[in-house]
Length: 208
Image 1 (cartoon, rainbow, N blue to C red):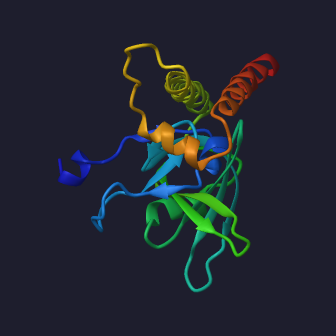
Image 2: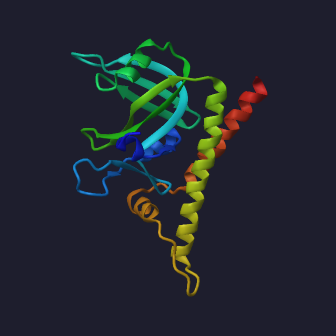
Image 3: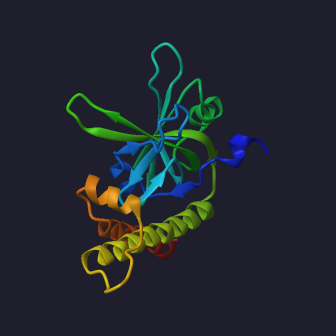
């Protein structure tokens, strides 16, 4: 196993609604090779993410060489995925897959500021694979669980900040502090997204 594989960051499971709100990125050291993190509004950091959704649209938006854009939808919103010559395997999947199709993607968040100051978040894939509906459904459940874990950890940290128990030491959660400082959207909003995502599975089962 290479050193790169040993130190590879865990891929966070994140719904599109939260991913697109993760507009602040940072490094934790001045090292040129230090990983770049997206700050999740639920109080965690993500260098890599794992998402599963429906590939609904693909387009070659490159000028001189192929540069593929994919639109991937989950129950809460849309991920935009971009792959070109530096991600040849992912680009070939976007080129060869006929939408709609379920896809699983591991990749890195990327932010881009538009002329009007809006920050857009996209996904640069390390890998894309076509999957079945059972894999998609399982990811929705697991992502819901991980999102709730982050929301609840944030809530516990916040409650301790506001009303610390006598003699207790407030839990340290630097990413929750960063999220509260950087974002207007309260983490509880993502609890609603979790409910929406799980209800979409129930509705699909009911109509199957």
